[in-house]
Image (tube, rainbow, N blue to C red; front, side):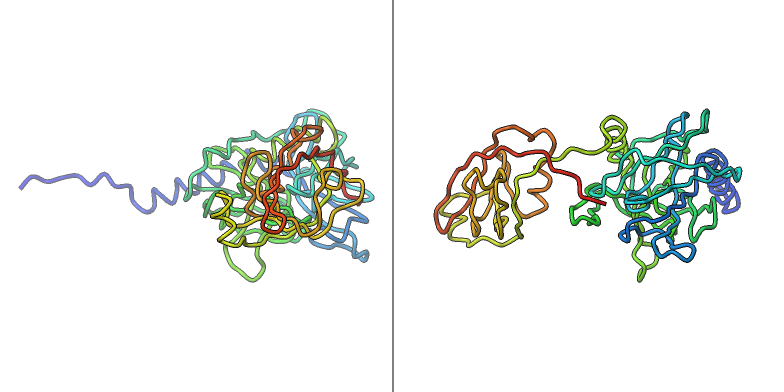
Length: 332
């Protein structure tokens, strides 16, 4: 009988490789991870509270440009009266809010320093379920804490503080705690592939990060304009199922729609002829199955553009024209 050599690496070799991957990521990325202390923040912030003022909080962030721009979560800094950024060296500087977007939970602040070590931003579209990821942040105020895990799932949706759905969220089992918010989720190659944003307190190993491709787009707009522009039509609505007979009769591509519960005066919806009780089933030629579909259609490209909207009014199907306007940001 011919002897064969087993080339399978031993458990020790595999554990050493895993350890080297995690320590390599921690060594390369930790110098760019900062602690963010806020005073007078909006009570919607989810960071750990610190000090006697209940509106003080602690979160995380990471330097993503050498000239001192820091990415974090909107819920960490939204409405803050003052922001301080502390680096791993212990140096602490005042930071200014460049802009934040509560609807994707991404924010950018400017730390007035020069030649700071910046992370490398990766491509979240290349992620695979099961791959190693490392989370770095300041859980409960303990600076530069490292946890490791895997990508548990891709393409999740997460409800933001505003009620809007954030798409393409990364689920991970890398442990997150209050104060981790805004820190980087990093691949084994040392590339940031997500912005840690949420955990489920009653669960273990179910945590979420905003995909870095989403965060890069939002951060770019915040750097350019200080805010994200979205379109607005001026309706309040709720998702409702459609009567099957109407779906068949009108050959609709959806079995749900958005019931208009109120129309703002002098809004695009009011000017288009939309009324309370109408059901929106198509917008810009695309089916609207519910309120989240409508939110996804209301992009900045629609601002000022005459757009077709299909509604059911009673048993009648109507086609209207609506011109979305710029959605004004919410007050802090």
